[in-house]
Image 1 (cartoon, helix red, strand yellow):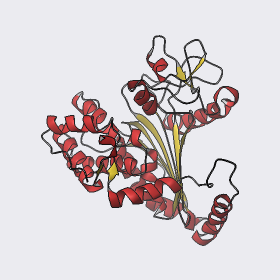
Image 2 (cartoon, rainbow, N blue to C red; image 1 turned 45 degrees about the vertical axis):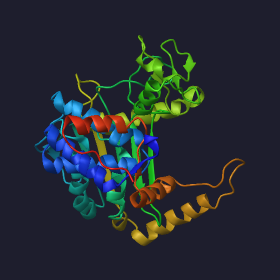
Image 3 (cartoon, rainbow, N blue to C red; image 1 turned 180 degrees about the vertical axis):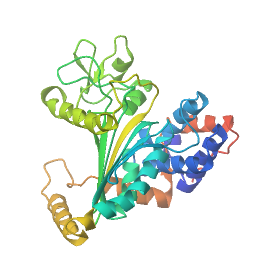
Length: 351
């Protein structure tokens, strides 16, 4: 099966870079986007890794993603910065934002950058190690003001996107948190719907508000919606988180759902906190490592082998796939092979 074949990570990066360049993207931007997409697959986020390459190329061809240029600085107060991304690739913008914030966070202890009009930013977890390895605690959140697939708790009409939020926390083994305000994502819903499969639990409601496991309900007329975190009984928790993320992204950007936004994209919130600049790195690590030990050493409930921390499985998978090759899902490889043929770029040989 194609999904059982593995490919060298560097070969996948080179392939994605060349495809993006052939599609018209400036070389530096293409290399960064390719790196972020492959990083998503390395960490196991297969709906937000190279699965996004074909949709990104399609948006380039439709003129809906900018392929060169720089973000426009709308406001700069030292520790608080606002950019207009000009529909540039989200992975490149977020990577540039981290680089821009690192010296500011070291100077002020913390610094925040918000981006309006970014293109889609791929897997949030892909960026976390870039900051954690610099002794930074990173918080990253995103919303898409042009998209709607999640209804407010108690409602039946979509207002929000899944609104992901991620955090990278320095520790002996870094904690990598990547969650969303909804119980599942648009990407996973689309994949299962294309495969004719259903979720194991009722994570959606149809247009009348009836719970369902069928992701195809999102594509009916009128469409259903994804439930917020907490589901039917405790969805007020995800609803509250969605509103917070909207405030951090669209609110601080001054651009969001109240505007006539169009095109697949993102409004982005990014903050870095210098662990050295508060209590000091050693004191910070002592607290986090104690918590990590308490969690990992916790007596597991029946049916659970061991208690993990966010990032444990992803980092182990990343190390394994860097050594043995990246395993791509069945549904991803044919789309990549079509890109290879269309742009005359050889597809990597599996191991």
